[in-house]
Length: 138
Image 1 (tube, rainbow, N blue to C red):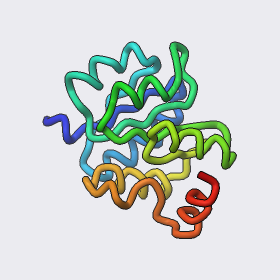
Image 2 (image 1 turned 90 degrees about the horizontal axis):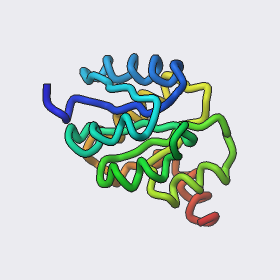
Image 3 (image 1 turned 90 degrees about the vertical axis):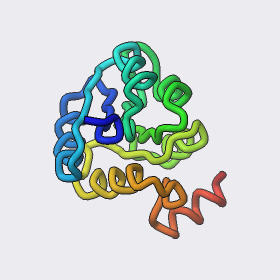
Image 4 (image 1 turned 45 degrees about the vertical axis):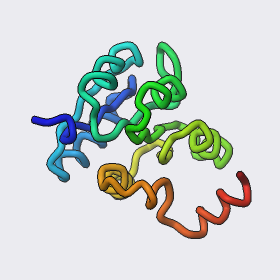
């Protein structure tokens, strides 16, 4: 299996792994799951997964470390907060998108398709109203 067929999930939460894994399987991809940043570092640097889904807070850091290490691999931030400021913070740090928990299967599928399509111009948002709000807020 090539690295282009992997999605890396970095999250201490089992639910994140289960939902993203189900979406990845639908798209013919396997997942790698790590609970800590240090566990994921090797996958990020050597395997080069197609996309990364990362919790905003990790036992040994946060999503910013992941984004810096993963570049240019797209990183989607997973958070317990469905707040506009958290979303903008993740985008400003370099995330390609943001999902608030509990993860919604349709939204996870949409984002997975977008981040693995090699068309970053469609990321982070497909909703024009939210793109306008992001431009005004940013």
